Length: 88
Image (cartoon, rainbow, N blue to C red; front, top):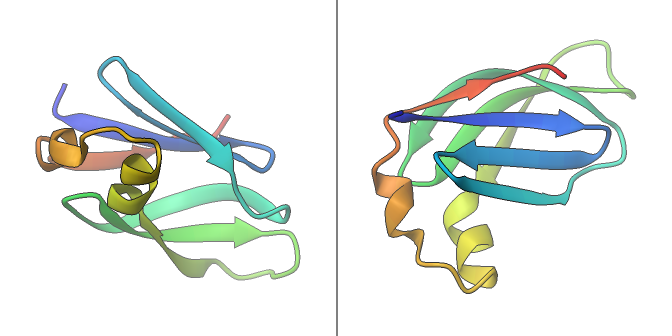
């Protein structure tokens, strides 16, 4: 699997790649991730739907920083070729 999956359950953001699953608390108003605009070595540009806005909003997630804060080696982020959104 060369791709990762970005999803959420309520305000919990879930990033999954192979046997790695990272969960963290996201914005309280996050409804869902709609579309990945760009992925580059752990940096994601993503279109999100929030409860306070009718339109999708572009947001940015730096997973290299998140992974480093968890004392994990971020090298696996370079293996990822694509990130897909899933709605739960």
